[in-house]
Image: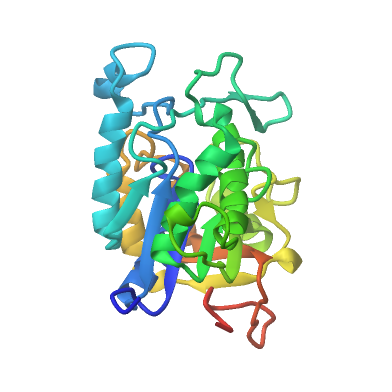
Length: 303
């Protein structure tokens, strides 16, 4: 399709703000380089914790309206990153945020009460078909989503992984729903993650600076949460330090979810641009094309 950029990336995320925290710098870099960047957000984030006191009335158990507000935050964040193609899976309001609770072991699990229309309850084939339509329209060579645990166990992250994985398979089958467009095989699929060595180094700098509250309970030399990946299992590290300011501005746009005095900005202030300007990935499909240090420096490498 001549009207599409030569190289195209599709990101599949659960809630508004997940995309910026995970791959905001990479998104900004690729936009600046003229590559196509499309974001699909699977829910409106109705159940998110509201960190702005004057907006607490938007909570689902009060007046409601948080999803619509976060829709505006997402639009503002995408303007900061330069991303012009962002959509909701099946259209805004198709799937609700499922909510979550914390397991005693420290990871997320489904809430006791899950709304009937929650993404966690979505029919897998139906949800995947919505994404197949986007894949066949955008025809990305690269797709980015979560690992099978959703990073930290959030049911919507896990469901986004499942939907993305199934949709990639279905999109390549010519006889599956030809009404959704011509079959397309996504060449490379990545799971976003965090580097263990970088996380430990960052925590060490925080603790040495006397900060004991940012990522409270994490020991630079102790066990780390599952969202952190041992370096030997990483496939790619994208250096987008030149665009980290745009990522931080996009984080500020997600004001109900991210505070400027919270852990993300504390890490940036103490560790510097590398904290959020270098983003890590594990390959789930395709053939990596690593550089001299064993890591890819471009998700499109080898294509």
